[in-house]
Image 1 (cartoon, rainbow over the protein chains, first blue to last red):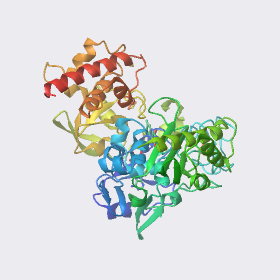
Image 2 (cartoon, chains in turn blue, yellow):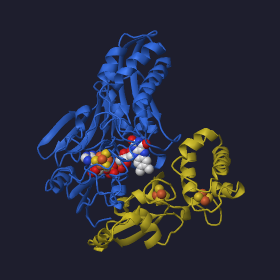
Image 3 (tube, rainbow over the protein chains, first blue to last red):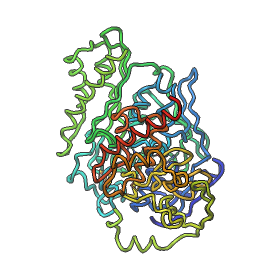
Length: 332
Length: 177
Ligand SMILES: Cc1cc2nc3c(=O)[nH]c(=O)nc-3n(C[C@H](O)[C@H](O)[C@H](O)COP(=O)(O)OP(=O)(O)OC[C@H]3O[C@@H](n4cnc5c(N)ncnc54)[C@H](O)[C@@H]3O)c2cc1C
Ligand code: SF4
Ligand code: FES
Ligand code: FES
């Protein structure tokens, strides 16, 4: 690790003051929460902050369900949220996505805020032995576009970056219209999760709309999405403890064998958590019949671009949607 | 991969920042240490406290060899900065037995021959203890899923699962259930 000064402030205003000195994303001052991603990136010299500001103890870890819906304090761990009875009963998609993420140890350490802001698993990004990575070193090129890109995105890509956003949680949350609560030196604001992450375009090093010193204080999920039939389907290279090759988060409301409304988002294929409004529209009013589902899921291919090794994802993601809708529809 | 680091980077990394006073509570004993802020909990245990039972397999959260309990919950000590573990109750494999009396899972690992080289074993046992306490040892399938954060290069998985089943049976019978 590059040497850094570790700050352990005891309240949020002190945190913001410490971070306010820094510039956007590639800042010499960075936050650390559970540390499960940050410590890896420090160990690999991918991040080299001069100063690391700990968020431990300054953000709440409350999990609350009220008339407005669900609120997850940014410091709540993946394990706590996954096991929370109210989440399991009313927002099972979130619990499933979390239980399909990482390992029990990591889930005990990792927080909600850190999960949404974890960095891509693109192997070129995480290995400083490769020079070309626009996300790590702006302007250096992209080793993945013509390299090993089996793990990379087919939606939302640019010629400058095709990295996948790796969070499973974010895929479930974006399907449920979640928002993040932010606090910065300029005050508080709320941003829909679908707007939190940016497309790479020609600035892949700018990953989110967060201002330099802003912290995520909470995640909120509207009550309107509680109690839907849902399923999180994760396709991966081994049965457990692996990132998604493709994942599908589906939540539907049905009337017998007919879908009234559907929410569909994909992981493993997008440069950000990817919601599919066109597939949702096609599913609304559709029968839970394989051929009908298949036709609706085909719309997910609109706008995709494979780069060779990852071409298979375009077909696989359609099948994942069909399977996830079928499983959700079969739930009591 | 540490091997991939260029000499220039390694040299820059040599310049340490001011050490921090860190107080760690390990297996019931308070330890006062002066640590470089970069020190992980795993390195603090192994290099500074000479508690070498916790192993470093990958240093990146991927193998589970470094698993310890923090406030009763299993974590990967290679992904924790030691200074941020201050105030937490940490238990390592060295603190598991009560005197000469092994923890039931330690006994079960011996009886089931649940290791070959032994490198992953302390991590497997600490994770297994947590797996049982959490109530995630109800069936072989459940154990496999909830032990997926611990890899064994020797492939002793079948015996590890059996040992955890044995110890889970002991703990449920001693709890009267
Ligand atoms: C072995 C392994 C396997 C994994 N597998 C999966 C998987 O299958 N699926 C999956 O989704 N994830 C997986 N992960 C990733 C894991 O979910 C993330 O590492 C974790 O969620 C990050 O949370 P943290 O609290 O540890 O964040 P940290 O590592 O502390 O921080 C991550 C980033 O977020 C920033 N940050 C943290 N909190 C805040 C906040 N409140 N406000 C502003 N900025 C903040 C930090 O500055 C940093 O840039 C895996 C991780 C490991 C180590
Ligand atoms: S895909 Fe993005 S993160 Fe990966 S090498 Fe290219 S620029 Fe870097
Ligand atoms: S050494 Fe910590 S998980 Fe491998
Ligand atoms: S016994 Fe050798 S790695 Fe598990």
